[in-house]
Image (cartoon, rainbow, N blue to C red; front, side):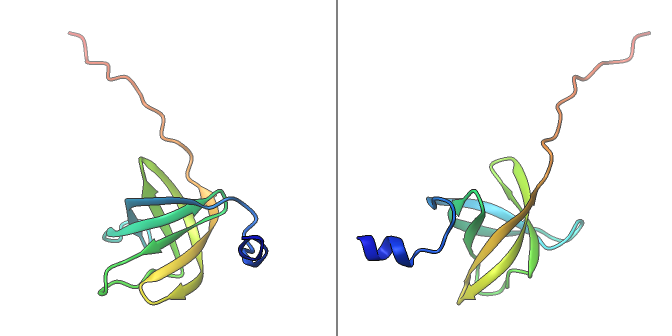
Length: 100
């Protein structure tokens, strides 16, 4: 067990997820679904379908939150990406109907 710990070069704890998410290559680009296999505070590991290659930099939407990532490794249909920046949370505004 100690060897596995020493071989793992991550700076933060990895959490298994197995959640569907959406990858956007750039604003306005068509979304592509992926499976987020695991995540950490510093990045994610995603798996995509055979007809889509994860772009070098992308936005990932997961559970209502969005962040930008940069790919650091690829292996088959999987890619590991480091967090570049989190999108600011969207503020909810109350709808106010027009009067009169």
